[in-house]
Image 1 (cartoon, helix red, strand yellow):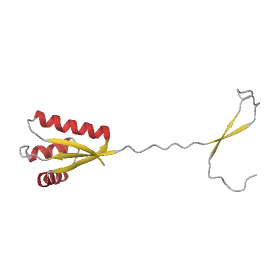
Image 2 (spheres, one colour):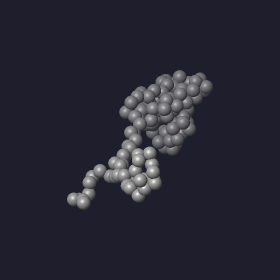
Image 3 (cartoon, helix red, strand yellow):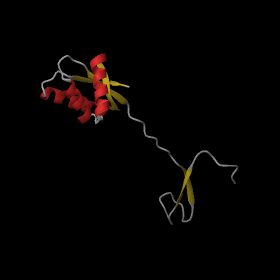
Image 4 (spheres, helix red, strand yellow):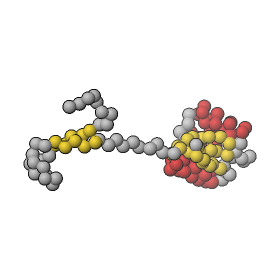
Length: 122
């Protein structure tokens, strides 16, 4: 009956006494089992852009509250942004990255700082 295992998986289902396919009870139908794979979401870098007016302490606090970075990492990222002009605050799926960008810009606006944030595909 079998000459080894097939690489394709099958699922068996038993039919009832009289089902809609016209088969009588006790018969088994073998159907190929389908595998579904979910696609990983596209990721985006959230980038902080340096300016000459936003205090460093404010940027560190943003990194801690919005991006949940520990103090040491937040300070390291802030210094990188200060020295290089921009720096990656985090990498997220599109909707989360958009939310983080809006949160940063809203908090900066409320504090009357010109800090800007952007996102780009990874």
